[in-house]
Amino acid sequence: MPLERSQVEHIAALARIGLTEDEIQMFGDQLSHILEQFEVLEELDTTGVAPTGHAGGLQTVMREDVPQDSLDSEDVLKNAPRREGEFFRVNAVLEE
Image 1 (cartoon, rainbow, N blue to C red):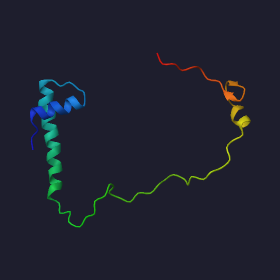
Image 2: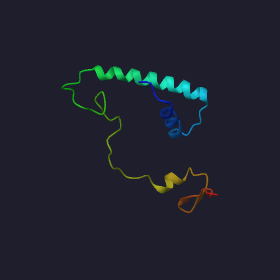
Image 3: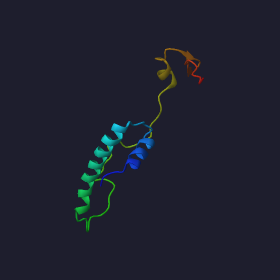
Image 4: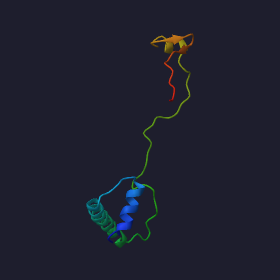
């Protein structure tokens, strides 16, 4: 399924890139080849295959979220390079 020139130009516009005439031809050929590779999947018989968002089973690698007491503020602030009362002192960050 070869892509038309207008389709390649549209893809380039979506990606916000400018293409030369040679690049339009080159990327058109490359993208067409990629799409041809996916056409093979249309030949597969997927009858009885349940739709899924992932090919394999998912499991979380995160620990259980267990509430616990927070750190003592003095312990946290004793390593602060600068502090102001019970707060961290940081340089102002302003947008220009």
